[in-house]
Length: 239
Image 1 (cartoon, rainbow, N blue to C red):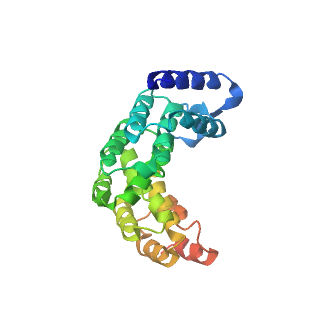
Image 2: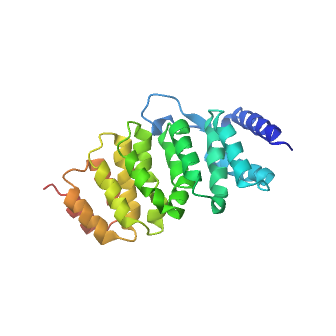
């Protein structure tokens, strides 16, 4: 089947699935933007994404990325999720040049915390782990006017943190974001510290204790979530 027909078929099938109220969920309560966020349930999309990848897995990296970009143009949550899913499935084929492609996707197509986390904890996060020479560019995101890019600067390191990599960079990124006033950015770097604490509890605890006067309570709570009760008590104690 031609790629143009594949995309048309995919979009039509997603629309058909969305007609069944049992297939959709209202995620609005997880967002604070006052907008409705109703989309296909993750249990439905995961199965759908896997089935559709079988149709295109014979294609090369460039062809699959081209399909992903066309899916992103639909401006539909499920199509966007499919694009990010496919991009991650071909991660072993990534090249350095893909950073430019992924950053363009981040700028143009990420506009919710869900899409930011989906993309950055998987495809983009894996790319950064493979090509750490781009870390300096990610540091620039912490100063972006785009809150999703600032959130991404922390979330993109979660994949590496789970592999116990780049701890120094994790702490540098976090330090750059400490005073960020955006709640979703605060939660992002708190989450990053939490993931890093699994393999580096003492270092993360010491970092938290040194900087907790500057950290919003929401970020602090996220950061210490996986720590023992006695350390949590110390961290939460007022100075």
